[in-house]
Length: 249
Ligand SMILES: Nc1ncnc2c1ncn2[C@@H]1O[C@H](COP(=O)(O)OP(=O)(O)O)[C@@H](O)[C@H]1O
Ligand SMILES: [Mg+2]
Image (cartoon, rainbow, N blue to C red; front, side, top):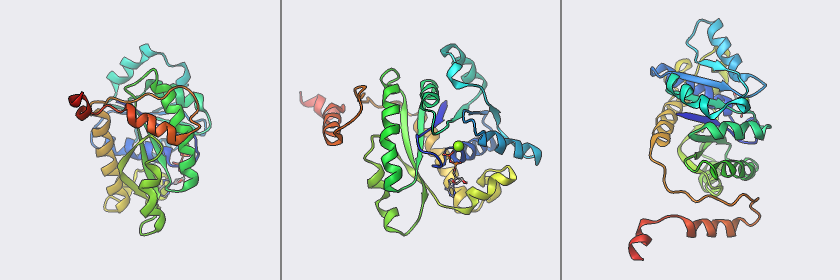
């Protein structure tokens, strides 16, 4: 499976999620490749750190994803159980190319209104790809959740309005996520008993299952900017395939 960590906002956790999942799946014995599509090369540096400290690291490739051809995909899938593409926030054309090759888009977002606004733009990007790749799945992960606050309580209803499937897993705002890369580790190896490690393991399980599950019939939005979200949602609601309706007709 190929999963793109994307989103047009920077600092949402794309690299942290990419590498945490890669290291967790590697520990579980999967063949994992991380494609570091971000010129900042954070994922590559994380893996370099791991190698320097003689720890387990996933293979990281830095080729230009925009040059990839559909004929490259079977080989990529045959050589790896899981390919994770860590996208740069500010290069939508790189994200588009990554999504063209992916089974799923995974978009981390903080549970704040400002981060939620950025999801509009990301959802438009994903939908434009979904026009030609209707099997593309897309998920939002709530990241840097702050427990026991009003923000936390309202996060799910806030982020469920942007067209993505909202994952059950959530990641808290935790020190372990910031400290682990310095040692070239994922949090599951850095602090195996921590809440952060539990969250990574739960996300790895949920994402693996969700990406492998058969696709639900999905409405494909027209390739125009969404100006009236209420009208769009009503249109989408009417177009959603519901077996109950099919039986009535
Ligand atoms: N759940 C989290 N808890 C604490 N810090 C986090 C968490 N997720 C990400 N961060 C921190 O936020 C910053 C941005 O994360 P990063 O993965 O580099 O984002 P992106 O790749 O989207 O730009 C980094 O300093 C990272 O350590
Ligand atoms: Mg990054």
